[in-house]
Image (cartoon, rainbow, N blue to C red):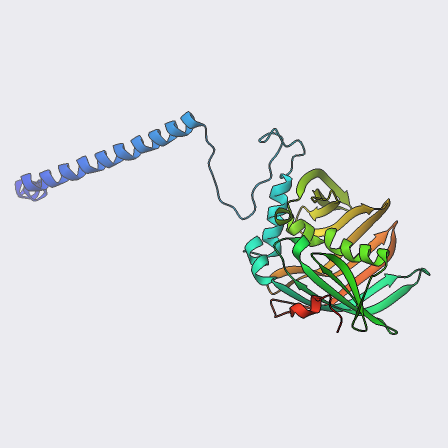
Length: 299
């Protein structure tokens, strides 16, 4: 009876062969895995290349891992490209070009006059996007209680339209009109198309908020400093100098319009005094804008 019980648990030659084969397979698999791991580790040690990880927001460069950057921040180009990505998430530059082929905008405009008082106007703005900011066509209609006139910018310069007649606007009006583009957000977002140069001027804190300071200089040597939020990569302020006068423009009320970021409120300061305020009521991109709006001919 005891022999019978032991016999039932004995391994037959056939079963022994199967177990032996399975054991050898497991041993072979373990050897292959260990060999591959050792080879990968050796390769990593040999070429010294770091592990590459894909992240939505890259880790900032520091003076330790990039000796060329002594500020401990991103490079200027990295910051600008990250902003472009944020302003048209997730398509970036290509999405901006696709959506913003044309612009139709309505709002309120307040500007200080020669008497030091504010004039308030309703405005209409149309734009046709060009290959760069210089080739962009822009028309701004300003409707004051006593008069309505337009300022138009094309490849040849700026001219005015009043009662369907073309006129040469005052120099200060032309300068203010041009500065909205030359020293505007688009100068930053389209730095590459404009052939502008970028420079990182470090970080700065204002009222507890930390900003990257990015200097954008166009081909004509006109420089604008953009203060870009370290947290959101949005442009919250910009500074520039024109004719010895220092200007500061602040942007508020950011919201998405057709998938692209737009500040619906902006304020321009000169020596801490407000000289211009813009409130956007509505903005539409991509609708047809007639070329005749930018024509220099008289009707």
